[in-house]
Image (tube, rainbow over all chains, first blue to last red; front, side):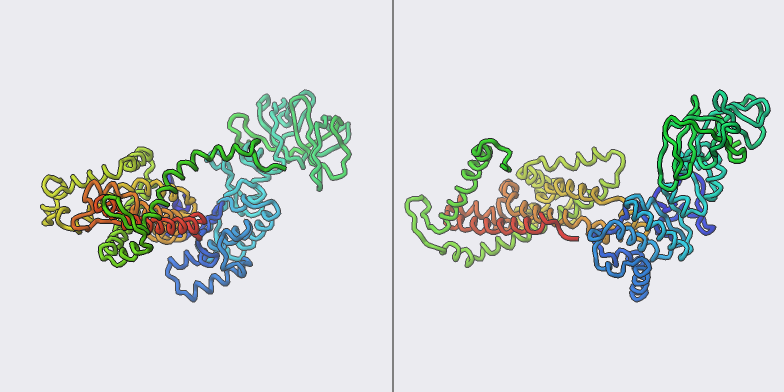
Length: 305
Length: 292
């Protein structure tokens, strides 16, 4: 849609303050990195990268110079004479980026560029994209299902759900103050634990389960049913006299830390524990939660309260 | 370890036996007959035979009519291949763009393929009939006096059109499949790179279609060479004055009308060589796909 490949159903798209709704893809001065790379299979790496420049009618010497420079930046210099099918997945990915960068467009579009790469290459390429974005300083629109990519690469993130933008914000804002329960339950690994709670009469606490009460950050009308969200790292283990007891259902060892899944009646939440905690399923753990760390959402609309 | 999935050693042989029998009776036997005939000279009543070695071949290559037939065949074949491929590519490109009614459109375009070559020929023959044909009447209105009974050029154009029309369906199917095999994202990438529709066609679509194009070129030339006998027989019968006498038709008319069996057999041997050459081309290049 931004690229001009699909028809816009409503609203306006502006690039550099100019409405581009009615412009052809070629006239929008954008470059795109496709999920499947979409390299021209019958052209060499060099011709793949030069194609857009040739169409723009740049002089031969300048094209050659730009190809040389871009290839150097992406370490593709020794591959210029190869055809795409003679390249590995990571190399094809770099060629696809090279083809976009070489044009020096006003906007980059990335359509899940890393999803066809294996995990190790993905981390490496993610850093590379980050570096290239910093170096070129070109506005980039990056579509991904991987929230790590979104959090690490994005300056501003738009969380989309069924075609609706749930929240627009910096990575920090999205992580710390999710605007809806969808965002809360999506961002983070594991994401926020979402619990149904009834506000107590004192307006500052809520009942999660019989005998399990958590503090609220702001007073809410008593008796109201709300959803509360708590990040695993904000749940703190404590002594039996101050905290509430919950049963450990199972423990996931992640290496740097552990995630314990706790349960009490219907209520479930996750807690992030240091690496050497010796907990196992069936143990009882006392926990407490700081009021400021609790997010509240409307039960019906899912919006943050 | 036994790599064969069959328990009895004879079973595979038994299974291919019908095919082998058919090949033997209908291909190998007549072919060897032709080879043998081509070195004989026989009188028109089949009463006497004489071994003449390569004399039949020598006669052929000294015969201006045979060389003319060669030229006619090449002109005819490449004109048919070019015309039908260009038209079917145009149709395929448009069919590929159609979203609604796509399958109806496709089905309709495939129909001509079900028509026998002779019928296709007769159809066009009638449309261009100098006295009653609708198209010749239109041409007359446009100031052109069409007569394929008298003009060799008109006759040639007629058989080219009829033969090409018949082959469009086949080419169309392959081109359409070829077009649909090109990932949409490639076209989108080219659009974003700034290439307009025409440029995209020449620099992306056509090169990516080249395996299909090459395959169809071979198939079409073979078709025009050998499968158009019925069409020509039902329309011009090689005339006027041999203007549409392609090699296959000349084999027939020399052998069965002119009763020069030796000369006719020698011609079919030459045709056989051409088929073998084309098959080799097909296997060497098409099977391996044209490299891109």
